[in-house]
Amino acid sequence: MKNKYPQTTAQQLGSIIKSARDIMRKDKGLNGDLDRLPMLTWIMFLKFLDDMERLREQEAALTGERYRPAVELPYRWRDWASREDGITGEELMAFINQDEAVRPDGTRGPGLFAYLRNLQSANGGDRRDVIANVFRGVINRMVNGYLLRDVINKVNGIHFSSSEEIHLLGHLYESMLREMRDAARDSGEFYTPRPVVQFMVEALNPQLGETILDPACGTGGFLVETFEHLSQQCRTVQDRRILQERSIFGQEAKSLPYMLVQMNLLLHGLEFPNITYGNSLSVPLKEIGDKNRVDIILTNPPFGGEEEAGIKSNFPSDMQTAETALLFLQLIMRKLKRPGQSAGKGGRAAVVVPNGTLFGDGVCARIKEELLKKFNLHAIVRLPNGVFAPYTAIPTNLLFFERSGPTKEIWYYEIPLPEGRKSYSKTKPMQYEEFSACLQWFKAGPREENEHAWRVGVEEVLKYNDDGTLLSANLDIKNPNSAEALEHLPPEQLVEDILKKEQRIIEIMNEIQNIIEAKNL
Image (cartoon, rainbow, N blue to C red; front, top):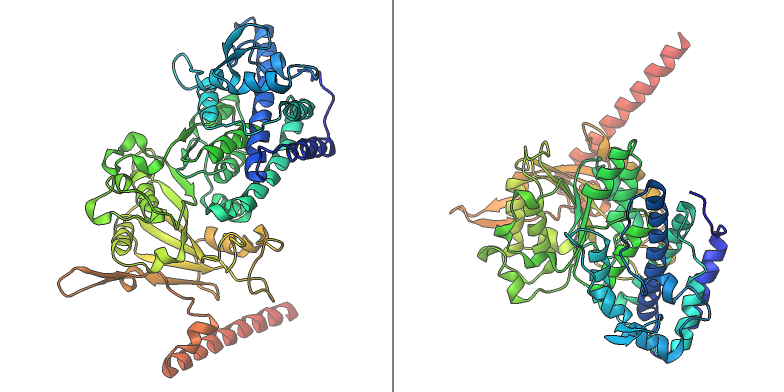
């Protein structure tokens, strides 16, 4: 279908967004990027929605089908926002904010936000429900209606009617999300660096037809990366339908990230994001059955936070804790499909956890005991210092496990810092290329030990008292090849280790010599 709008370049898009944000800085009701980004997001959301509705209307007209728009007149963007000389000042603010107001067509009725919050689909599961959920958490913090009109006029220059423009805006939007992450640092919101997300998705390698969940999806990094990964597998219209309708699922408890993940997924091409608004931990664990389980979970659950007593009561009495990360780990274990439940060996997961989860005792140890006895924790990837800098200095790890039976041995892989570096920083973050050796090792079969990879039997992790009660479940196993570990080896073991390495060097030298001699024959 021909695009009636002129093509917008990346430079023009960047200029429009910058101009809109510069205007917002003049409004006294906004407090930094944590207010400006949500404002710009809901405004772009409505412009994007109207452009998509226009395309759907045109497609329906060509096929002779009746089309019911998600947003009706006079609440569509084209009805109140697209004219530069449209309603402004106090009239605009009243239309947006008030429960009842004079609408752009001169009649009285619900204000814009009141209307959007009360949208409801006929039978559940369409865009009206998404819009209603998004705007239940939106507040218009601008106080100057004239400045708001200027922002709207700027955003009106963006046209979401070509895949190229949406792709360009997606990249710009991700840069805005990074700025929000910077602004959110003091509120305890830690977002996963994209190289870590890319590695985790590539390592699990989701396949079209599988269901993928992030129960603490934030702004949607894992879901967007998974959507892009699955998009490359689509070959037919049916493939695309499976991707759009039965693949990507998420849940988010906070209103701002919930709005941002909807916009983020829509911009990347998911037409009806299936994101639930609310705390994933609010459902009692025992109520999660087969129909609620998924093939894959990719997530970085909140850590360092504490849940209230009502949430803790949803978990077994001997597994209750206020630590959010440990509650999410139990939820993830419960939500994975069992073997044979259309999931082959069972569901699989990749989860970011803080170092404390590896060595924690008490309730933490009991949770890890269940993980090791009922799941195959086949790999732990130890991330270098500062991966989450500057948001937190807490060391982090990636757990990879499957619901395929008990763990027999655990493989560890330690990602080294680049040569000459002691840590990462905001200006020098981790790069995806630094995962290449680990990814190659991860996918290789069978895995082999090297200077960064080692394995540990489960009996070395689970320790029991004489009466059979659990003593410890320590997963914090150091790299035996590291300088720190070698310093603490007893002399006889250190000598044995050196002899083994020298023997291996001799074997390699002999192999090279044989190759040279064979070439000279």
